[in-house]
Every structure is written in C-alpha cells, then in structure tokens.
Image (cartoon, rainbow over all chains, first blue to last red; front, side):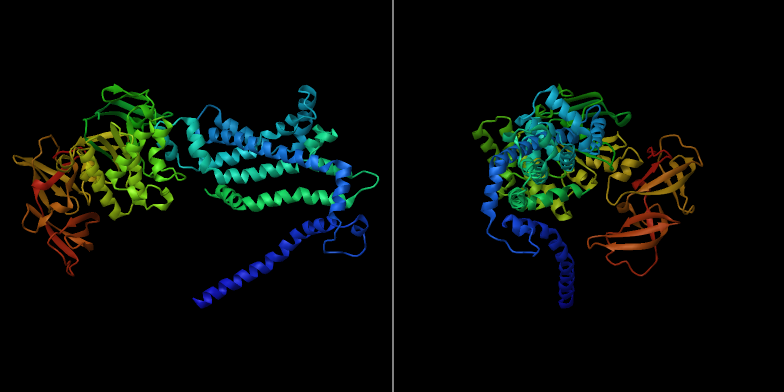
Length: 278
Length: 360
C-alpha cells in the first residue's frame, strides 16, 4: 500500500512539474498586462523589465476615461452581454429541446443546416448582415443591433440539443402520463436538469459577447454607444497612444470574465464533460 | 376501476410492423402480465395502452370507452417505469405531488393523496429526500407511490423490477402483489422474467415477435402450453426439448424414439394425425424426470455440471450433444459418476411437431 501511494505521489509531482511551466507561460502575459496597467507610459517602454506592479493604475484609468468614456462603454458591454446571454440561452434551449425531443418532418434537414452554419466564418456573414441591419432595418447605433443579430447561435442549439437528448425519455413520458403540459415539462423538468449545460453555455455566450469586436465596431460607431473593446480600440491610432490606459482598460475587461469563470467553473467543467459522454 | 379490451391492435414504425393484430380482454381488477423475450412487442403494447405510442390500427378500450385518441393523462392510468423515472431534482414528496399540482388539483386533496400513498408503502420518513439519496428499492417504491396518488383505473408496470438485485426483486414482487390485493385495481405488468409472471399474474399473456402466443392462468400455461415456444418460456429452468422421430401409431398413441438414443422409445397418446418417420420434439420439464425404472422408459445421460442448491439439485447433462437439465430433489450429493440413468414418464411429456405446434 505504501509503495502504491508513493508511486501516486511521484506521478502527481511529475504531472505538476510538467504543467507548472505551461501555466506560467499562459499566465505571464496576463500578469504583465496587470503590471503595465500600473505603470506610467515611460515605464512601460523602459529597457529594464519590471515584473512587479507600480502605483499608476488610477492615473492610467483617468486618462482612459478622459479619452473614451470607458465606464459608459463598460456599462454597455455588460448590459449587452447579460441580455444577450439570457436571451440566447432561452432561445437555444427551446430550439435544442424541439430538435432533441420532437419528431417532425424535416428535422434532420434543420439539424444539418444548423450544423452547416458552424462552418461558416463570421467574416463571410458580416457584410450581408451589416447591410441588412444598417441599411434595410435602419438599426445602426441601437441596442437591438448590438444584441439581436448574434442571438442565433448554432453551437448553443447543438449544445443544448445534446444535453436534452441524453436525458432519459422515461422522465418525460412519466410527466406526460401525469398530464403535465409540454411547456411545463420543458420548464419544470428539462431545464432544471440541463442546468450544468446552461451554465457552461452561459459562460461561452457571455464571453463571446464580451469579446465581440468586429460587429459592434461596424454597427455602433457613435461614441455613446461603443462597447468596451471598441472603445479601447479607438485609442490605437491616436497620435499619442496611452499604453498604460489601454492596459488599464484591458485589465478591467479581463477581470469580470475571470470572476465569472471562477464562480461557475464547476458547472462549466461538468457541462462540457456532460457533452462528452456517449 | 376498469377493464380493458384490445381489438386487432396493430403497431407499425414506418413500414415495419411490430405488433400484428393483438386481441385481448382484461377484466376489471385483474392482474395481467405480458411476458416474452426482448423485442416481442410487450412494452410497445403497454405504451400503446398508456397512450405514449399511437395505435396504427385497431382499438383500445378502457372501461368500455375507446381511448385511441385520448391523451395519456385522460386515460385514468398510471405507469411505473423500469428506470423509476423519478424527477432527480425534486424531493420525493414533490415527485409524488408534482403531476397533481401541475393539473391544478386542490392542495388539500393532493396532500391527502400523497399521505395515503406514503402510508400504503410505509415511506413516510423518506419523503423529504431526493431520489439520488435513495436505494434502488426505495426509488421503485416511490415510483409506485407516484402511480398510487393518481388513483388510476389501471396501473401499468413496465419491467419495474429489472434494475433491482435478486433479493430486492423478490421483496418488491411480494409488495406489488400485496398492493394489488389492497387496491383491487386492474394492473398490467410487463416483464421478461417468467418467475415474476408466474407469481404475480391472474392471467399471463405470452408474446413472441409481436404476436400473442397464448393467454391463460399461470398454471394453465405451465400444464397446457399451446406450443413449443410457450412451453419453453413458462417454467424455470426451462423445459428440455429432445429431438425425436415418429416410429409408428398404435391404439394407445404414437411411439417416438429419441434421435440421440433410438433405443429410448416412448408411447404418447396423440389425437392429431402424424406421419411415421416425421421429426418431432419431445418436451420434458427438468422437474418431471423420475428415478430410473419408475417411468415408462429410461435414458442415460452424460453429466457436465451439477448444481446443489440444498433443497434440490440441477444436473446439466448431454445426450449425444443435446443438452438437458434434470432436477433431482432427493440428491444433495452428485457422486462421482459421469453418467446418470433417469426415467421418463409418458404422462408428463409433451410432443411438438417440426413447426412447434403441440401434438400432445
């Protein structure tokens, strides 16, 4: 028994020895982003490499706020991401449920089309989508333009469909025999059981919206309607680029995501793993 | 409470027919067991009665009313599933009351029904647990409880004990039987376990490949199986079938000889016409062998394995590569012999033709 636990410990040590450098490589840019956000511009470009934070964060943030009204941009980003995530999870759940649990003519075709759209890069869609939203519907510089067009999320539909497909049919048959209405079966039985998958999907969708740069840049160019990544992007190209301000903005952009992930990582991992079984 | 009538019920999945015209009468308060091997259509038939599958052709009546187009919830039935189908995120109490609540049943009545079911099944102390915190037997008891609260006309059980271990299965079998006596409600029970069928049923329906092979009381099926399939399916261990040949017909019946040992001859009273030389199957249950010299003829078999269970022993043997099982109640010790001579009594033997139809 002793030698077995010793072998296990050695294996663990070896694993950590291999993974620690990888973790450092991954974390180092994040750390440096934080360090730079606390330094004045001349410090960032100093030939000495400084690995520890300085005290200039508030100053950098003030510059950022003065240049971009970054707090407003953060508010827009958060609002858009939250509304988008809630709506998209609702829609993808309903679509996934229908595709997983109901037999109807053309179901396979619908699934194939949805699957097909995953392979389409956004760059292919962005121009027609822009023309449709901005020119045909005249929705440029509106909340609707920011939130609605990306709502259809084929990956989310397939993700939720997989989750519902894996639930035992007998659960829903039992409810049907009991006379529970279809929408109540969805709401009271299927959705609570899909919670881990929904949590994982929420993180993915929130992240997608939070990081979305191209679409908000195209559709919302008015200063008061910019999302945070777009606002940050406007700093590059100015005659005097405030790198400390950009880094402070990047830290503020990254922090919420890190917190969301840490808070939901248990759900995230079980949700992703659930899709891997069968 | 209500009886059921199935008239020429057919089920097709696309072009594939899985139930071929089932006709069946189930009396009010009867305990009926559908039994048959996997894929015989017994669960499909049950799901059609429940309304979870559409009927392709024919009629299902519950309490004299055709229910083909009636929603499952309006058929006054309750169903217990093999996998229990308890909602894992709800407490047991909520599991039991969920259906009634969703249908707007008054709160007091729901509570009364839940308490009544809990009393019947003696599950009061576990009501606030979740299914994941219960053992398999407890879960199945709650699944039955959920059926009881519906106060149905007909209970449907779809292999409810298959996921339980052997000991628990026996215990739950007794409980279901007791429940039937207590409630007096019509119950339809699907299983592939013939022991469950024999012990629970007032009436057994034997199915094969989507067809009803025979309907009858358990002992009626045991004593008078309609064909070789039913004879083989009812009884445990299953009936032995030995290849035989018709030697000739006399006043007292036909004489057959075993293919494995043509010296073994037996005369059986057969009313139907059979041609001399035709191939038949001699059926004899493991428990119907007699001691050597005590029957009408003897045969010697080679012993492969003997299982001594205490109250009885089963000898797994072969005769010219044809396997057979022999029950030896009096033999606790097998001895060292490789062979065994036993007797066959014509009165306890069955005879089937090449198509499996019963000749005797």
